[in-house]
Image (tube, rainbow over all chains, first blue to last red; front, side):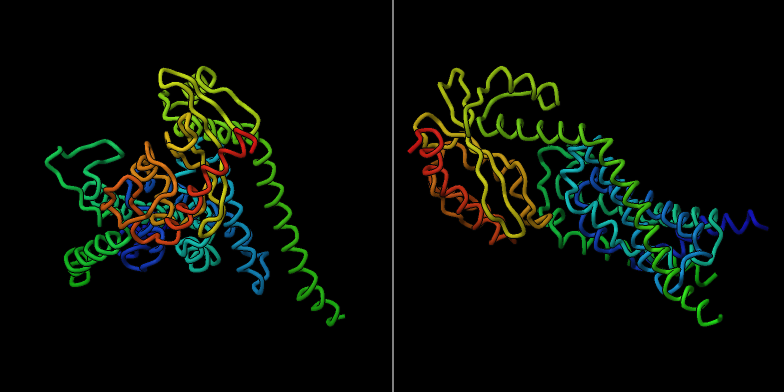
Length: 203
Length: 197
């Protein structure tokens, strides 16, 4: 029983309760960092790490946090984890840190993290909360990666900075500019909702 | 009795809880910061040195060691500026800072011996809008200044043709403008720093 529940907690954010294409959370970073696969990977790792660990920490403290100040406490804990990500990147992956610039700090405001903490971690035990946070991060990751692959391939003709398409390819500059993010995200949400999600809801 | 209890529960406990949470978070993050400070500073220095090499249009291998090696071989540190010598003769590299849209833009500018012609421009730090103004870091943008003389005119992205024209960044008119103003100060600044005038 407990195991199947945990499995459900793990699977839901990957599919029918995906934070990006169902809950439409975390869209700002989805649009902002997906023009290069490399940046996207680091961003999603940061978000997954922060979502999982802050959900776990807050779930541990959930019976002690006074409900009136819970949002302050949550923000403080999330911010601490994000700063840890920032410091580690700055020291060990400076190039990446420079590229991501302010986005790392903006993980704090990623709605997915606060959303999962409020909706799940405050009412559940630490282990399920950790699983929920982690898999919400994964759900965010694979959607962002698919957007990033499309955008980088069409916009720069490359993947992970390595040129894939030959010189015959004309880069679609709009793909690496902000509007490209809107287009690809909208198309992906549309495809998923029209095909996969529709079948699921009929069944 | 019950009044006191609720006073503790409603006022003291939340305050205490927040205080302790904050303290723990600060201790954790500042501890980690201090632990990695040395590394972060070294990275910072390496970025600055790479900017100097780029501004001087010098060849180097883009690794920490490569930057160090090329820097020590080719760059001489003077008071307030840097010089590079090679087959091209002598180049001067000066640091410069000016306002941007959100914060300070710090750059390195390389100049040929006439102190007028640019050999290159490199960004040391900036806080411009990601995806828009922050594109001043991209190499197509900085490469445009090579071989040209300030002051520049910013024209629509992709249309620069004349000798003093450079492409502005679409969607970042203000940043482009600030960058133009910053580079316009270069000749005077170079005279002041190098010739002491």
